[in-house]
Length: 428
Image (cartoon, rainbow, N blue to C red; front, side, top):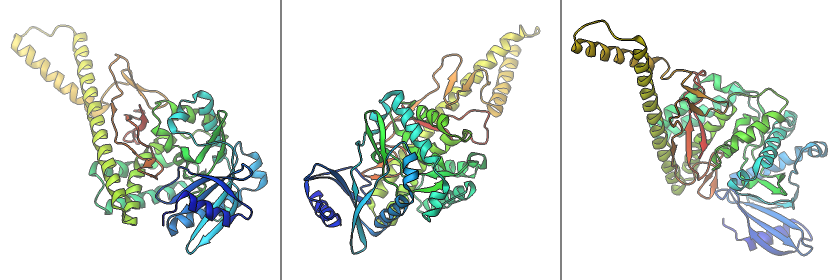
């Protein structure tokens, strides 16, 4: 059922006694699930209305009501941002519309957040840390989901099985995600309270700071990396890393070395989740959109991997030439025999380089963010264009990954052989 902003205003008037709207405008939301509007009443006060499009979305709103009730006044007072207050509800059949009291600030586009400088990145990092430092008892008392690390990984494997059954996942992507999910090293994390649906439309910003966090429909205890996936869609290549650095400094727990790698996986895997959701809803547009994005992601990743392999092979060959130059002249023999011997040796050593490490540690290295640096100045970051709406925003709807930007893929450090197949996806 589709409702206009004027219809939402009428519903809000019925849900909140005494509310008399004098102005109304549509606002961004998870368009596959909700219709939303911002109201202004006769006293100048603002209100937000969220109306579900189907019963599952209505259940999400009722889950949020349950979650918000768990935020006691004491917990709210400790947070560096405001949490919504529900002013009224109105049930119409299976659907329940919610009206929220005004919160200071307004949403910003992701790239606007990324261009906000170090102060805003620090704000976002502290905001994420504050969410992840919330007591798990808050989630348990609200009877919301709670997952241990291996249990969470197993759920992701089950989701991948559901996606694979559709027969619409490119084989290369399927193997890539399967390999990452089966790598237990990657999934050794300390579960925390997680927002679960974090993206720019659920943040209100004013005067360079995060004033409020909304959209608590997926609150749970689980993998903190899920709350970072949306950051990877920013056009600023260092934005996610700057936020993560501020986050690590604000957390009381030790840093999780694999957090951003799992965030990268979440950003990619959001496309498979979007596909499964489209199949479940019978939405041909969502299905086609997911297939198109996965095809483009698969093509770009394979291009990136081929370019990196070619570079490493060339680098290994150059090292081999230098190695032979250091040997000095070969023993006296016929010129033809010497050439054949050297070609044979070069071929053997190239195979050794390729099989063992592809490149010496002193020639190709990675920094703390997983970026490739090359001593001889050769380019190691091969940017590739992705399709529009790659992840966080899929069309008008939402998933929890990255959105309509360009991505480049940087390998993880070579010393982590078990997880080296899962690069960090960064925008460029």
